[in-house]
Length: 360
Image (tube, rainbow, N blue to C red; front, side, top):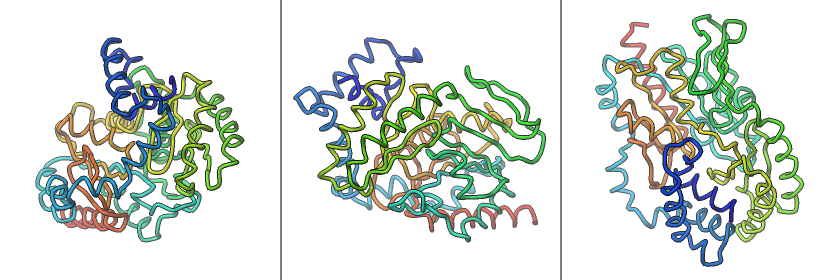
């Protein structure tokens, strides 16, 4: 029950108790309501809540609940609305934030084969020349860099718990964000790792998850340094319950860790108030745009974990979020794109516009 409660809290955006943002009474009320909604109190337990959540978030289910046309009215294609986006960003500094899997590269069965195209890499290099550009991923920062191999970008791995800026230049200075230590590396590149103390625990959990899940065909556990990811894209749906039990049997022994859900992946992460939204805020502050009105962040992502960043932008009424999805989904993003090829087209148009505007 403890694990199911933590899972529900995260996926309903109510994992705020330990930060003091809501009262204990509020947390209890939220737990009760959500648990009832997911029928956890009716004997289903963690397994049923997790499997039901996965089914509810499947594209076919969502497509049956929402009409594509009405959804596109609320989240119009960013390519169709390109001129409007340029208009609202006029006079402001655009800063780009991009998820990796499903945004810059296609979703693939084997996460180790999530390669971006050469054309996408060329586009990213040009984009980084025009605008400050960051990749914000659930993957380990080093893995994302090995896929992208561009030194001009900022990389925020492990859902923003491992951030490093471009190696060149010396304009980054030591700063402090919330209660986390941030430092410069050789006076040149920015480094932020707010969950360092959890590294031994994540390594230990990773090893246990590998051992536990090896009996489930198709399951793949990935060590993303500050989080562990259990991929089930290749797991038959009939085995989801077994996999949930295996993951639960490990995580229940670690109250300082939580489970979040992405696209066919379970993420095991430290319970700290840090996510892709916080990474976005940190990077904007590091670039000197904290509380500025002349900055226009654009965040493009396809995953549930990107919603934290979309929500930050929507709440601040600053910049915009673009969801990458072929199917209607509940989202805090303002616009939509269907696939990585459309993302590349959008980025290319931004580059061409900036080059024309600046006379480059």
